[in-house]
Length: 141
Image (cartoon, rainbow, N blue to C red):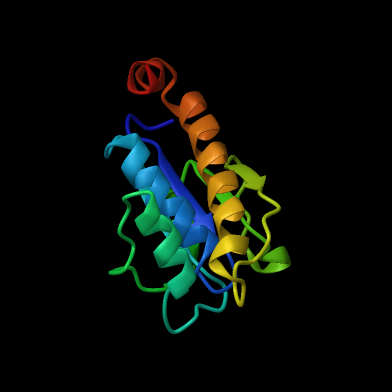
C-alpha cells in the first residue's frame, strides 16, 4: 500500500452514507489517509440530515458536492468501500473491497440517521486501526 493510503467511499447518490464516511475518515485520520467519494447516480445536493448529524460530531460536510464515481478514482484507491451501489461499481483486480450494509438515510428523520452515523464512525475507526495501526493507537489513547 502507498505511504498514504487512499480510501474511496461509494454509494448511489453520494449524498449521505459515503459523504458521512468521507467526513469521518478525513477528520479521524488527521490527513494521513487520502479520501475520495463518488456515486453511480449522484444527487444534486448533500442530504441535509446527514449534514446535521455530522455537525453534531463537529464535522462540517456542508461544502461537499455529490460527485460521479469515476474508474480513475477506483484505480487510484487502495481500499474501496461500497454502500449499496450494487453491480454499478467498477471492480479492479488487486484492490481491497468492502461492502458496508448501511441503511440509506434518504428521507429519514434526524433520530433515524444518528444510528447510521454512529455505525459509520465505528466502521471508520476499525478501518483506520487496520490502515494506520500504530498511529491509531496513539490517536485513540
